[in-house]
Length: 424
Image (tube, rainbow, N blue to C red; front, side, top):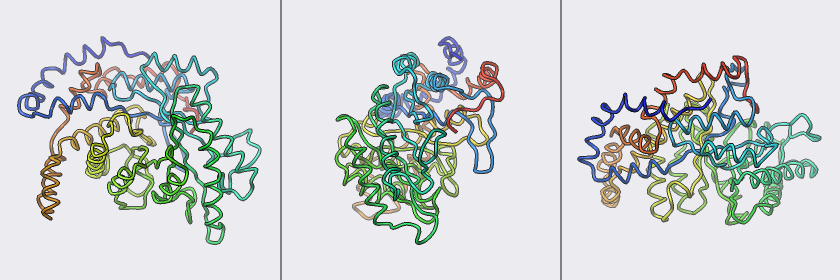
């Protein structure tokens, strides 16, 4: 479905008086309000094509109806999100789930919705119906050189699709590892994986990046060949200047200090980007900011500090993407919530008094440092985020308008109540 501008204008008019009252404090009293609003307008968060359908567990999946049945419908759904919040201006495709049959037409459709193509993602963690060799015991690490070559060729094919669409990065996540002690020679697995990645890296266009994603566990529970940020960092260093570490917030062991990880990676020039989600136990892929909002804020605090220290552009120099699984929620509602949570954490991090924080650190004053951080975190920045949306032409309250227009029911009417998004 197409969201008409008049729907947004009418909705915003009904909300405007209350919004302006909340915003007045910021515009009248806070000198940094305008720069923060502009940074929020510029900041875009990519939506992965696979997040537009209902997720599930190893035991079942419960589709919610009206899910996109094709790449064209996935683009339309991301376009709808972007029309609602003007902060979701990119889509990330997963190959072979989203192979474009007509790349030019797909590019034109995306442009019509104001979207660009973010990093493309390869898939060597599943066997496809027409695949000659199996990845049951790994892909880029496999003992069989023919299977390794199959996985290499697939990644190079993904690069070709990305080039045709105007993407500029490849994300490689490997399920490679072992389930039992003794199953795998760790040193050989590392060397084989590195050699395979080197062939993929050699196929990158000059202006592309390679993101090496890591995960501490699942689907292998004894070892993962790229199991932590250190191993990803090691691969990225060995591959060269176009290779970076990608951080998925759910891909760590419990209580890992993710903010320290991203600070070090950014300091070393090897942080490529993020997959945002939240977790209670492990890789739960829950709505960003729904479980640990303070951790999300602390991560952004380190990001803002590190980006500024390196003179990097907040909006363009790292990859920002959501990677969530909507087990019981409407996927589009969940994505709207995640985007807003990320914007709120970013805005709060922009409020931190950097000079005062550094003074407290140098004076070894942890009480003062905590007060500075928590003062920013406890500040209600929702009026700033809403104003950034309004100025960009989006809805003051995207979720409110989504529900008012009963968009999910309209999608069910167009697509059917039993549709299942492709690729999951």
